Image 1 (cartoon, one colour):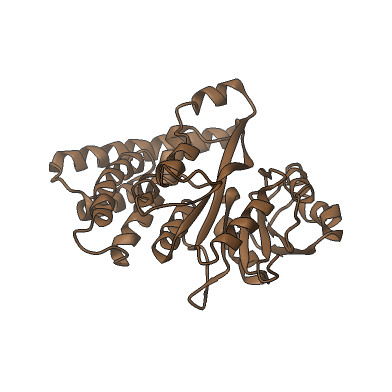
Image 2 (cartoon, helix red, strand yellow):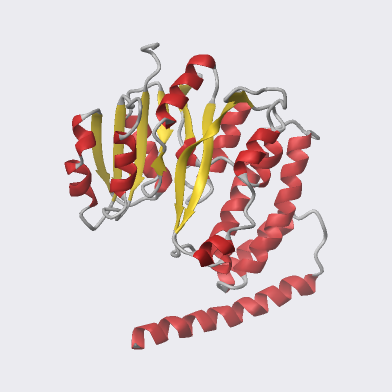
Length: 335
């Protein structure tokens, strides 16, 4: 095997002593071990650090255990990437697990396509309840989406995606970080996540990597993604995610990542117009300050003129939401 092809697996973790065993065990079972495993404890207050330190994987590979103040997944991943010594970075979330041949598949793909900017495999979703499985049953099949951007005549396991992938990357990420691997450096610069993004930082990075070069899809299930009943409700998720959707999409426009009047740029603008509608709706369920900011953003990016009474309606609703939220907080304190 080409000795230049080495992989560092980066695992960001927070209060995951009960979950980390699954991810670390899955690395230990690999048909080919990675050169390096880096666990980044993002300010845990349980025994996550001690558990990771005692895991047998530390005796099998170059193992690094880092601890930092809590700053979010992007900051933890970036610390791992900056510390890594391998040519490639493979990501693994704390509650997911690699299938036994995942690292071997990534290495083989990298040998066949040494200039690719991202290699990723298919995933399977594992649910902890029938109710959650039913609620997410309408989610798209990411494997089929990836296959749709490959040449239909390509029967190999390793497939190069064509540039139609932007259509789905922009609308919604179909690549799971735990199945992905990318070069640690591109054009002499270390590949890092945008730390200002608490959510959707993976979609932001993948779009930038897609612009930089080709993606390779390993048409095989590379990891299991675990979904638990602790996932947010759609409303709460919308309130949290909406501003990040807008920030990511607006960033693509502000950075001039795509040419004027290109299909990709127009698609982003269409998505922005839709997402700022969502932003305005969810902001009004939070508070007045957030709603005022959302109105400014909406006026900048919407593709249609909004009657002034709609903004007034949202402001009035935000006043109601502010008092309601204050009452809920007070009631919690009084319990």
